[in-house]
Structure formats: structure tokens, C-alpha cells
Figure 1: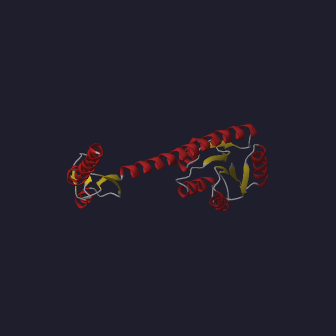
Figure 2: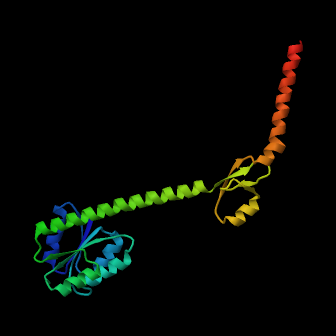
Figure 3: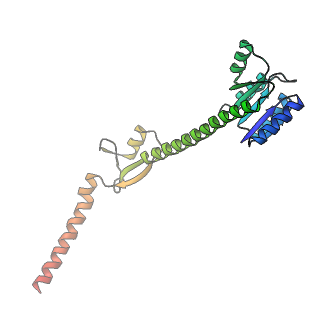
Length: 214
């Protein structure tokens, strides 16, 4: 899983990279907010670990920008900070921060927070997959609902109330994308199919009587 680490302090950034790789993550690193946004858009990491105080663009601004860019794809964000003020924490949360981690970095705390983020992102991926499956099933149901019984002879359509009407009437009443299946309405059965059946059985009967006479 890709994790983007952002910090203008080279020592801290190197420490983050080593820890991320040690924990089994694919580490991407940036030294400022502008560079971080470019890497984010290019690689779409699942998680972000960013410092608060940075040149060019501070951490909360980076977070807000990422949230605006990727509304449909969630990113788990951990903010590194030495701030303990309640208002600062609230500002970070309002920007879109998921977790805070105080400096200097404690490896065990970083690992724990990354594990939480990983679980959340895996659950989100699973949920997204299920949503796509449900949408596919819904589209399939819609397609099945689009099939209509249509008389093979007069082309009348049978509606949900078992009433037959002309195609033009039905389509004007139901503005939907449809596909046609075929059936036979009662009128056509009586006027078309039944006479053919009667003629067929009459012929069979005549043939049997002829054979019996001989």
C-alpha cells in the first residue's frame, strides 16, 4: 500500500521513509506541500503522513486541497505536529485530518495509526467493490424488466395488468428503454393459431380413418 510522507525536515523525512518501508509500505516522500500534491495526483496513495508547519503550503492546506481533489477516493491522513492546543487540533480535523501524531515520532504509535488507516482503507475498498457489484446487479434487473411480451402476429403488447395494447400506445405510456420477447395474444390465438391446430388434428383424424378402412 502506498503512503505519502511530507516533511520539510530532511532528517524527519528520512526517518519516516525508513519506518514506512520497515512496516511494509511503499513510501513516497515530498519536502513541501506543492511537491506533495503533485505526487498525490500522480500516484494516488491510500495514506498520507504530513507535517503541519511547512514552507509554501502548510499541512492543513495540503489536506484541504487533497480532500477537494479526491472526493470520491478517500485518503487516510495522519498529521505530524508538536501542537497540543485544542483549537489547532480542531482546525486540523475540520481540514480533514483523521489522526494526529506528535513529534518526535514514536515508531510504535506510527505503526499503530498506520494499521488503523490500512484497515479503514481495506474496508472502503471492499465496500466500493460491493457497491459496484450491486450497481451491476441493479442494471441487470433493469435490463430484465425491459423485456416485454409481444404477440407474434398482431404485435400487441401485454402490460402488467395482463391487458394487450398496440406498441405505439404502450411506448407512449412507458418512456423506457425496452427489448421485446414474443408471445401470442388471445385474439390471435383464436383467429390464427387455433384454426391451424384444428386443421392439423382434423387431418390426422382423416388419415387414421383412411388407414382403418384399408
